[in-house]
Length: 365
Image (cartoon, rainbow, N blue to C red; front, side, top):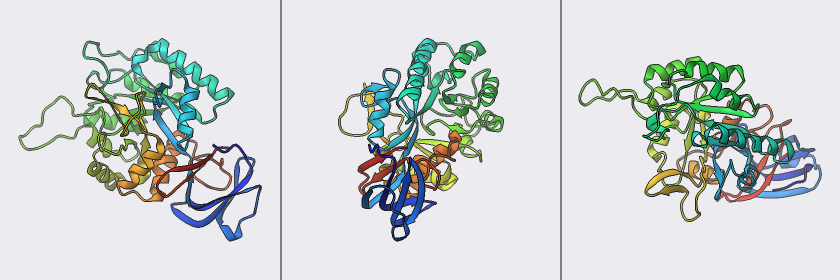
């Protein structure tokens, strides 16, 4: 992590949907003043030469539970520091419904303190639940969670919640989505087996994103009408909505999303609506970037530099990777005017990435 805020960088700059080879970025007081060819660049502050490496916008991870073996509800500062080393300059600490209301409120207070005091890479909180389909979010012994307003309003009114995942088939979530919109919070649909009609209604009602498309989602209970045919499940219904973004957990093994399904998704909706996430969960280290517990899939061990590498292996270009690891998330959260791309006037949140996707240096305004 580089702490200086006035400098000039040389490298292959990924900006505006293209790569400026042998380019330069000039930064003063944490703001970008120049982006363009090296030969025309003003020299501002010390020059740091990353020739041969990519200069990409700092990664933005909107769905992250942990860093290494530390969970966000335990120590959000430590989680943010862990992911900052891997190029993540914007992080949403994600809390799952099993923490309970009191646990989530306590965790949000830790996040709020970190944001106000010393951890600028934390953008806020993502709440995953509590209004999820019992088939994809509650234990079998638990009753479905009723969307009672007084249960969730204390969570939302802290002022740091960026987006919330809910299953649109849960009773009361239309009113819940209206509350999110009123508070300026992004509504994400997921952990769901909603019908086409309910997915469409949520999208028309203002939902903006799908939480980890293809994971913890499925078909409605109704069977196919005819043998040999299929019905539109939650995922197909979501892909038919023109204004949604789609989170993708892109691990190297294709466990969360098979490589061919990712390629089909890109062909259907284009890279401008795909958001790469880690969904990182606490767990022991070791080989691979997927967490398994007793043979069950338990999230990932991803960092965003690995996410970028895995998207590249799936056929995404370097400019497209800048979109799916930074720009699209910034657009979803409404912060693209300040983050998510290397452009004049924006924050100098930049990661120098070797051609093998090894992080060389991270700059943050």
